[in-house]
Length: 178
Image (cartoon, rainbow, N blue to C red; front, side, top):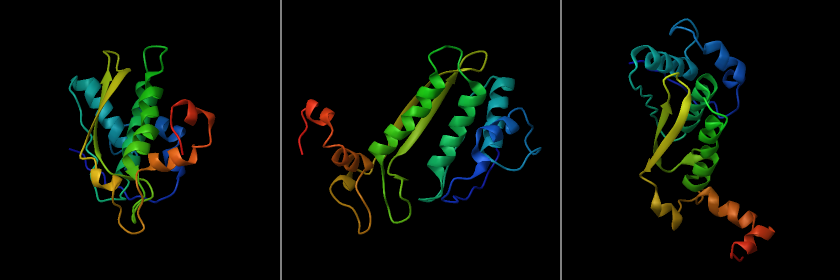
């Protein structure tokens, strides 16, 4: 299969904006520069042409940009695949990322937003290749981080978010206290 080597620049770059998605959409592999959108487009085209499931495996060391690359691929599918209904399924699929990051990501010495779990995301498409849903399975959550963090590392983001919101009225309404 296709291999893409990507390096995490640790900054926002204009090469991931909406107009770049449209530039890669419909292009043949090799016609454009190597890019996560080229890989996603090739998987999308092969799914449509061969009517077979496709996989994109994102692998690398901590801080390599795996989570961000996967999010960009999902954004590509959400933009190109769209949804057949008014329920805006692609927005729901993309909206799961901040929730999952709050619960399963933490600051480490190598990455301020390091995923401390693995995830398998399955995106469903209808016969017209519109997104109809998604299923996410998580595995290997680093449970020990709840009670112990190495020096200069932090617990899961959600705990800091809860502390920061403790003065909001909703906090008390949920039966939580400082």
